[in-house]
Length: 231
Image (cartoon, rainbow, N blue to C red; front, side, top):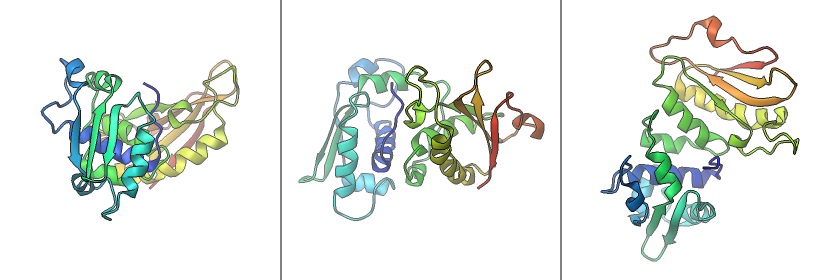
């Protein structure tokens, strides 16, 4: 699957539907997902508002915006359709999503209230990583420019990203999520060992229980630009 880069409304609705899918008789499973991927589902817009993924206002503007964005992602949805007359949303996830969700090791439990915290930008990819990592003793994950929807400034090297663009996109979001985590975030922009150019952002924070020592959590490869981001 391509990195999931979506506008804020679509991020919230996508996560809400991932959650609601697991409440149906055709919940996420490791077996027989091929047949389940062909079935359509529906829910009321009021139920989605109750999850905190949409404004309480009774107009459908939020859903129109979100559905329009998600309808452009056949890698995520086989079908998604808003029925404003009846106040319902119909959807079926794509086979790619079902296949990805059938591989749930490692996995993390996302609280439904977390959806309301999404403000856009990299929030979706950060939240999905954080809920997996926070149960580990030494939370540590890597993001690339492509994960955050950044094009490489070098057509011949798709791994490279512009450091200033990455910092503008990533660091404000990490500052918000550090408060959610309850721990400062240690961020390192890493380069390859054999040539200059930033290719990944490594993110670490202290888990519960915590196995990171202060020295280890701040230890990054040579030529890494390191920041500590507090809430």
